[in-house]
Length: 530
Ligand code: N01
Image (cartoon, rainbow, N blue to C red):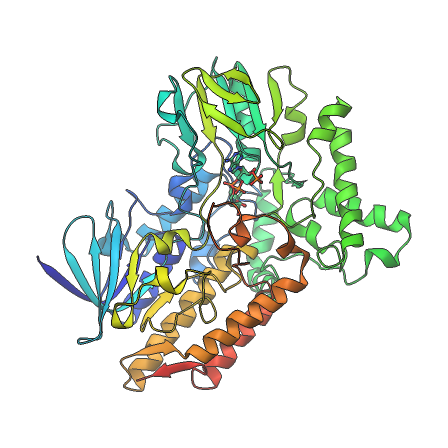
């Protein structure tokens, strides 16, 4: 077996892997990136379903490490669609000449720490072994598709798709009878688009979702110019926001104001669109009564949008608002006014089987030509646990995380020296704008590598006590939020047998960054350096 040696191996060429590569190369380190896909972009390489679009505004869902880059790139819409974001990732790869260190169509199967040499051995599906002193997992939070095992899947005469593994050539649903399973973010974006093509669309809904409008529109060049002129202050305001997105958090309780004022505030956020709705009042994610007021407002919007009151009722969520990830939509509820769209409630009678003709639910068969699984991902841990990661004494990450992920700051794990995770479980990651969270992690890791080199250290790993304390702190604050109270992918509830642990750090981006900075200021407090 041939062996290639580098200073650092990076797994994944999405936004995290690309920037990590750029940073370590600038430090003079040799690096190899392995990427399973045929191109860069990660999530945006795979998720090509109709209507795929980011629900963080494009001027903010973008890198800020290079002012030249953020000044020269022109976004065309308030919320960029998948093809544009993919073009942006490709532009970054070309602009910084990153491709020459990326090996595409190569999946990492194992990462094994060798105590004798202090190196990581990386094995891929192309046979060659690579060794490196450092290994960075830039594997993404939502990259392993969840496809429920349904009886009869192989017997279906039509085509089956998953939103996260969409054919690159696209799919033409014109004239077809289509079934979409799921009503999360991927489903609610694709359903309005598929409905315009399909002869008939059946939506199989297990849990209705809350959504807020995107109010997407072309980006006015004047607005874009103004943002670019003041980019530094916009980015700074975003960094001071819990979600890493620039919007105002109202510090007033919804319970403290009169109904007219409540309505005014809710309507103002609705008119603004997007995630700023979370900032409407201080307690909507903390207090059940406050939460119900926000939920009732959205249910009112559903009744306005959907003509048939019975259908509006079926589409109305009753669970905690914001517990499952909030969706940002464009014409989702209105789509159900179309004569060619049927909502099938599967909350009480789950899908029994896939047959040759379609789906069987509650004894009825729905004849279909195509089935779209919009059923989400084995989030946060899935992509890491797919790789056979072994640390000291051959101990496996799968064993360490048997009862749920454990890490220090979502950046590193005790027993796994010189291994880093970008936006790993235990960091704010998916509760924030991913781009600034990725940049913060990449820069922390790069600074850490520079520190090790400056001080003549070869190894760093979290102290188990520091890791335990972080896990315990993250669990405690998750327990104080209403977000931890429902079945969501945040807590692993969407995957059978997965331990129920609220995985992202809920304490907010500014508090988390402060903690990371304190760790550094105190000589990598909580880490063992050797
Ligand atoms: O997946 P999801 P997603 N039978 O897990 C249902 C990001 N994202 O791909 O709620 C029937 O949210 C499931 O039902 P239930 C974003 O972070 C971002 O849509 O478990 N139904 C649910 O309705 C997002 O949150 C963007 O009862 C089944 C749906 O499938 C995350 O990715 C765009 C089922 C899955 O929803 C994941 O979103 C898209 C079964 N056996 C995604 N199993 C943007 O930035 C699951 N379901 C815009």
